[in-house]
Image 1 (cartoon, rainbow over the protein chains, first blue to last red):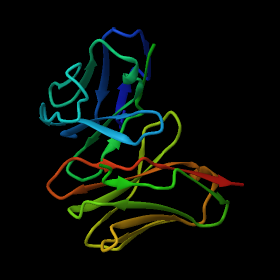
Image 2: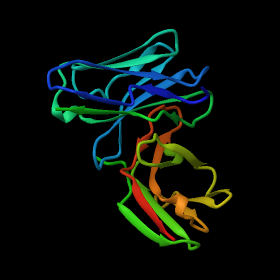
Image 3: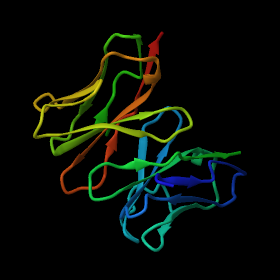
Length: 112
Length: 112
């Protein structure tokens, strides 16, 4: 497809389990971003990739969160030992040469 | 420390009238601004942008105004349509950086 895709669209998990969220950016976009939106909040920056490297991981809330990107394309955000406060919509965006970020539909994570 | 603020969480406007959404920022280094629209269960969609070399950018029914001295930008939608009902986010960044800072959003409801 032409846009950013994310999977799964919804994920319900039990506290303490690990989850993996996937993002497929727009083909050719070198920059990839992960954000989190908790209920009633704005978009919280998590991590940025330029190619396969992540110059800035400062937004990751704890060491339970990690992300990787392979082949300059697909990215995976992993949350280990999930907690209830991890429940949120996780959004991925990509950008090319321009300044505009294009967002995927998000993954709605619910930790019970 | 919220560098980008949208102080109105919600706004209701009659169809055909003007909608004005406001955004304030504190970081004088910000020089590129975006507005996004977000429908429920979808990712944010890019709407319009403005750089600090301009004070106005227009695209159809949407106009963004930037007042650098006041560190304030606004999005005008005229005429408003029911399909414009969504949450609107403003975002800002500084040249040479990659990280956009997002506001918490304003929910616009256009009444038919």
